[in-house]
Amino acid sequence: MKSYRKELHFNFPSRRGLQNITGEVQRAIEESGIKEGLVLINAMNITASVFINDDESGLHHDYEVWLEKLAPEKPYNQYNHNGYEDNADAHLKRTIMGRETVCAITGGKLDFGTWEQIFYFEFDGKRNKRVLIKVIGE
Amino acid sequence: MKSYRKELHFNFPSRRGLQNITGEVQRAIEESGIKEGLVLINAMNITASVFINDDESGLHHDYEVWLEKLAPEKPYNQYNHNGYEDNADAHLKRTIMGRETVCAITGGKLDFGTWEQIFYFEFDGKRNKRVLIKVIGE
Amino acid sequence: MKSYRKELHFNFPSRRGLQNITGEVQRAIEESGIKEGLVLINAMNITASVFINDDESGLHHDYEVWLEKLAPEKPYNQYNHNGYEDNADAHLKRTIMGRETVCAITGGKLDFGTWEQIFYFEFDGKRNKRVLIKVIGE
Image (cartoon, rainbow over all chains, first blue to last red; front, side, top):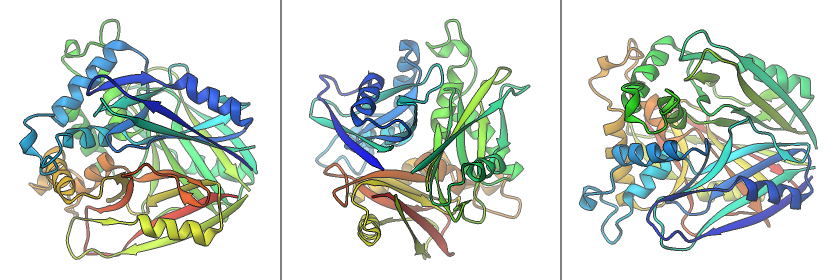
């Protein structure tokens, strides 16, 4: 069994934002030399998500509106976590969208359906954040 | 390390619906010959979910009502994604229920608690959809 | 490829509650002797979650309040599942928080960001419950 590890680094200029990281994950798989196996992609920070869905800007807007309805940013004092922080909503939004995804590798490629794309979703930006890619297989 | 890949195919007559796929996943594990490892089961379409819970029709009804409350199908024009589509709610519902599950294989079997069952949850049916099963181990 | 399996056992005195299990997962990894690989940690019961977030009591309170808003426990008769049961809300809350997490193992340790901690979240306590840890790698 082989394994390979890589980090992606982010520093978003805004509090929230999305980035398609599918190409970077595919590149890491190629660097690993692994043809059959699994790849784990997870946010290393607890106010960000990695998830799979469509690369369509209307949908990304809908996610922003929907998450803000399910876990509103303000008023900050509605959350006990916001004593010295103001990011409780970011923890909750990340919970809805998920910390990680696990994908299959077949023939050296992400084994994906037609519209599957991997995204990093930032909920508390303006600081350094990381994503871990771990590949295992043969 | 061994690996095995299999697809399941679906075409639901209705927009939404559930199907228990536990038996099919167990069958794929047996076909793989893998005794110890992990199995990934993921929707290959971005308007469907794979998740684990109880095979109880009352609960399945509760999921339908609950998801419709958290991410209503209508009015269609509340979502930016619904320019040429009407399935934005399906993307959101699938986000709540999840894209994938990863399960342990022990002694050639799904290593499950008493009530764990794997389901495919369709949110935008009346078309061909796929689920990927990827088994790795020895 | 090596693999290792371990169960954690719980019996919470209250209906809901959180427990940090990061140390127990790290211990299982050490027992496995695996240096590079993946570890799956999943609830074996369908009314409990395993998830990763901050070990901060204010946030844990916020989770309790937030989940109760998204999937209220009462009135019990709002859920079809609650014929002989009263735990439909526990199935829904667990769906939001997730069944499982998959983590990378690098150099024999959980490959984690600074604040990542693994929690067991009980939504229907006062009975015996289990978590499965499955480690694979080399």
